[in-house]
Amino acid sequence: MNLNDRHSMQPLFALLCFWAILTQPTSALESRNDNQAKPANAKPNIVLFFIDDLGYTDLGCYGSAFYETPVIDQLSKSSVRFTDFYSANPVCSPTRAALMTGKAPQRVGITQWINQPNDLHLPLPEVTLGEALGSAGYQTGYIGKWHLGEKDNQQPSEQGFVWMKSVNRAGQPGSYFFPFKRRNKRTKNAKTYWDVPDLDDRKEGDYLTDELTDHALSFISKHRDQPFFLCFAHYAVHTPIQAPKHLLAKYQAKASAIRFSGPEFIDERNNSKSRAIQNNPAYGAMMENLDNNVGRVLEHLKKLELGNNTIVIFTSDNGGLSTLPAKRPGPTSCRPLRAGKGWTYEGGIRIPLMVAWPNQIKPGICSTPGITMDIYPTLLELAGEKQRPKQHLDGHSLVSTLRGTPDDELKNRFLAWTYPHAHGSGHTPSHAIRSGDWKLVHLIDDKTKTEDRYELYNLRTDLGEQENLAVKQHEKTHELAGLLSGWLQKTTPKK
Image (cartoon, rainbow, N blue to C red; front, side, top):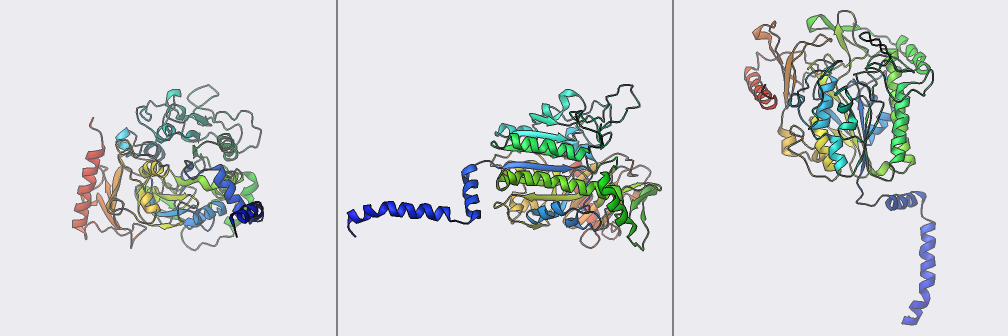
């Protein structure tokens, strides 16, 4: 073929190439469109589901046989699912402070849940996760429970989240049903700490978790052409335990069909009891509704062709509400973990964590321990941003673990907790530390006998923390007590 022949074939060659593109499989065309919509170097969007009081075993993918969570279970299959992830504290406000700052809660002076009225709040000079991602070009949004300050200048909108919806001034909603209010006995004002704002135009029967999701869909649609970070902090499944009525009968029938041979309640220290089995119909209905609403967000991302470029993180602020004094145990069960919310036993601090990013993070199961403070540096690294080690002092990026090769620091570090308060669950002040398979709980109540103040457990052989090895393994007890003491001194500001 001479040069003239080659030039004469070019129109035919172009036509054949065009025909080949038109006849490609639909998936290939979708992939091509995705690439055009989102360049390879575009920042990933981030959606963080931060669920309130969700226990470790409250999901099907973490062992529940009573609650139905098919959407979240499916999400787990496309995620790295952590088996040994922990909240920074067994109650909400300290863990929320840790999420926002990357610091152990005591560093910012929040070691207990914040009741109202209260001047305690997240210190404004802290560079929150919202501020860090906002400065990197992200559109930042916050929906739902904050519980890190009640005044106007202490809200998410003042700490890095330029878009904010339905953030009340307390730790729970007044009601999950319209008008989402409860009258404050300490004031005659109709507006209370527990009221959920910007939902006044809803109607009788509307359910809070559904309405919050409407906000999320709106935020995502509004910012579909910009990188965005949405912290979706659900009020569910915190008390009040109020179920969507159309789901309640289903779980009442499921509960009545259960044949359970053992005791329904388990004795715990300080005259408290833990629920031994998941059988609360209202809680089950709340869980299914939550699952449905997570599905609405994921489906919306897919519909807008944002799914492949969105990191989805799903986690909780502390363990499930399982343990309470006397004859009124909590609505869920954390078994086989011991106790629940408010305790430094595993039931109070071990929580779910799933991290998904299609085509970027290979799904799998991860047993490397992690903690709430790690989320801050992890998201910075996934977003391609520099670490802020002077800010997230107690967090370590989990990206190496997400890639399947945890670095030495992650493999060798210890995790620790301090909850120096009594709690309505029956807990008395304690600290705890985990190193490898070993877990030490230090009871610091003056009423506890000196010889009983340390409890040592091997979590590999005793996940339920039943056999105290503190005396038999005296050297390990001494070693961990020293590490714990040093950590407390390092992370607790001097008064």
